[in-house]
Length: 583
Ligand code: ASP
Image (cartoon, rainbow, N blue to C red):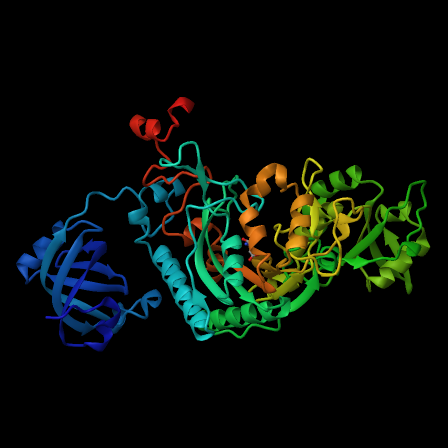
């Protein structure tokens, strides 16, 4: 007799079936035992009746999560037994025979309910049996299938690149692996296949993709993992737009197949405008509260202070805000306003006898002319709140953005739009930025081309920080889905960028001299992209935690609690690796 899967029993009314699975719940009544049995397609109810004595007695002795084989007959559930939340399960099985394949010990976690994350990770084999994890991992697999089909149809080649590798200078710390054969030498685990995929372009493969494992030894946040997966691609003779079109196409297909949704037009905005309008480079367009630029001529201080370079405002429309929003946030704001006085401030606009009146601290800071002008620019209406910020450096926008974001989430429009999807391309990121110590580093990675291909970049250039790169990120609802760029394909340009970044002769070109050299042999222009698969699945499954979309993730302290790795290794192996002296 062939096996029947749980999800198919509704097609088999009155038929004999054999199912395999795990026991989710057992409910023992006087004359009946109800068992919920689960396989990877779904769950069904099995009924064991007292008249079938052996089955009934065995059913009573079963334990949750045991693996069983059940023979029985499918019947329609009596109408009064179909519970609302189970309305899909209209059929059940009357058990004729039960075979225990493997009994389970007492379960250390609550599988279908929330257990502590530590326990869930330790007993991952049980946690993965939960509905939530089964759903997430299945969606992940489905998305990978869609992606593979997409690239296959577009004639991309799937090419694997090495894991035991070298540093790609992509900004994070590398994981290193000591070589046993080459004493005192180390491999690095790749932060991404960046250099290899560019080499593949030089080798003439033109359209490459890979579902690639990447490794970064960083301090972990809730949506980071030391090893993660990228959908990595590279195309020769392509420009930014052609890569963006490929990605848009792919993302549309994923949304259509997973949600049956047609995504709206992908908007686009430059990094600088994005920061000045949304306050960050990962905008969530569901939040309709946006910054508005104010010309400096419209800013007149009433008090003695130095006017700064940029001025922004945003309004909270009283009709869009849930009530008493200001009261909720009052404590937080009074601190901010004190700390940033007089550069961050606010006013409320009240219409009295057809005249606008202003309440709040801003009227002591700016001239009435200014406030009137700014409230006009922001289209303020009666009872609206207006927030103002005057600042010197774009990097300083974060604080004003925090205020905006706090309110955004409480606006009626955000709540109304919550389930909509709003993709946006953010382009033209800075080529160079300063790190915390003030050192010039790559804004993206060292292989990103400047937007102006004719530009001659020297480390003596004063305006390194103003150079714009030909780069682009895809952001959906405030999450960065992926990033990419047009690459440098000329030896001279790459060498000068390496030099600025201190990846030069002294440092053996960061072990990248092979790459520099490869650019001397007719390298084609090329561009690429990488989608963070884990983050994409988080969005598609509405998961808050990256660990919920990875079968075997690590904790935020980079431990795999199930296998207990990293762990100590044998002293003899350490000796062989020439590492013993370090322990
Ligand atoms: N290698 C880049 C990254 O991992 C993506 C790309 O530029 O293709 O972010």
